[in-house]
Image (cartoon, rainbow, N blue to C red; front, side, top):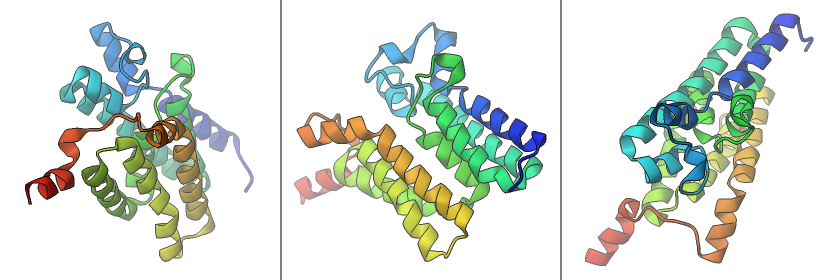
Length: 206
């Protein structure tokens, strides 16, 4: 594909949108830098653990929204570059220009992009995420396995090259951004959401 100046502008705008971190923007209103608390990550999970569900809900809404907006801009203004624009929004979330290149792990922005570009992929991903979370209590593991199912879904649906490339890229990228979670999981030091382990609690009572 030939890239026009408009295409390049959309790609740049997608990255800059991705660089707007929900947790850091809302944290400034509270005078808090969430990267100095908990795991040090500027994502929704750390926001939930450190500042509560109301704050985390706002964070997720912003991060999902920016991924959706970047994808929508791509579809409207540069259709052939919609998936690359979505990917750049996720990259911006992880390495945000506005926040010293220290952001989150990209999952919420990726989900936002999928809601626009491939909405039918979101329910199965959420089902995988919930199943792993309920069984294990590990948010990072649930996120990695949910996104790893995206290329399988793309293959099953016989997706075109652009969609398949996006699916594989997101699966590998989130595997990379969650590498610390997987290393802690292997060492047995990864934090769990015990209240989410509904399967474990049910079996304990059985």
